[in-house]
Amino acid sequence: MLNDSTARYGSVSKFFHWVMATLLAWQFLKFFDRISDGEHWVGENLVPYHVSIGTVLLLLVVLRLVWSIRQSKQRPEPENASRVLVKAGHGLLYLSMLLMPISGIMYLVGKGYGLKVFGMQLIARGEEMQWMADLGHYHSPIAWVMLVLVAGHIVMGLVHHFIKKDNTLKRML
Ligand code: HEM
Ligand code: HEM
Image (cartoon, rainbow, N blue to C red; front, side, top):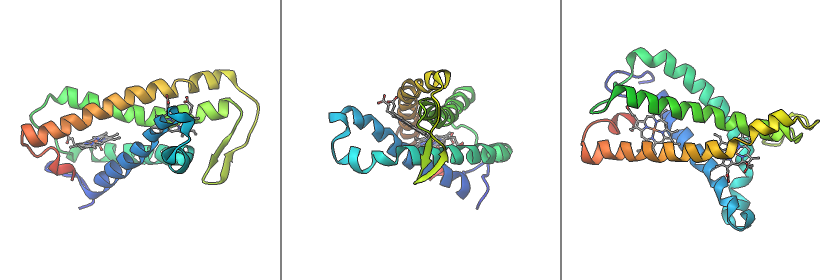
């Protein structure tokens, strides 16, 4: 089933959720640049795709938002949890999925480096724009906040499955 239903998420929502979760986990490997200045296997083989994957994630989150709004009338409702808290948590995850690539692009373009995605120069190198670079500096603090949000989200998913023993995780699998 492509569409969601009140009983479970459909294949399009599951595709967005799990493909983006995998790519976002890959993006978090950028934290490994803090170890030996990235001079290790992860830094040399996985982190170099950071800008390209991050830009793909921006496109994916916009499509996912449009899809989730179209499905909003027929999505599963939170089980054994406060509706307000669940909606707020998922809303903050969406906000961070948007702000991460936007701030990353502002960081590079603001510093005058332009934007190169999978070898294609999408935004040419140019003048430095201090205000944009300043906003781009929020990329790192937002990444830390998002890491905490994602960790909390995963813990809650596992609590529902193993402790509350409800269908919350199953309907996203
Ligand atoms: C959802 C997408 C993204 C995620 C989750 C993400 C995550 C991260 C993380 C975790 C760091 C390390 C921060 C630190 O060590 O404090 C980082 C740094 C960085 N990211 Fe991203 N990023 C994303 C998208 C992008 C995009 C699209 C670009 C550029 C077009 C970009 C450019 C950078 C740059 C230049 C740095 C190093 C600068 C710094 O440490 O402040 N990122 N990112
Ligand atoms: C970076 C990683 C992740 C992000 C950004 C994320 C984000 C989201 C968002 C926004 C939703 C709301 C539904 C939607 O609009 O798609 C959701 C639902 C869900 N996620 Fe994640 N997720 C991530 C990883 C995970 C992981 C690893 C698990 C495994 C425990 C998980 C378990 C769930 C479950 C069970 C739901 C359904 C919740 C419900 O029906 O109330 N997520 N996720």
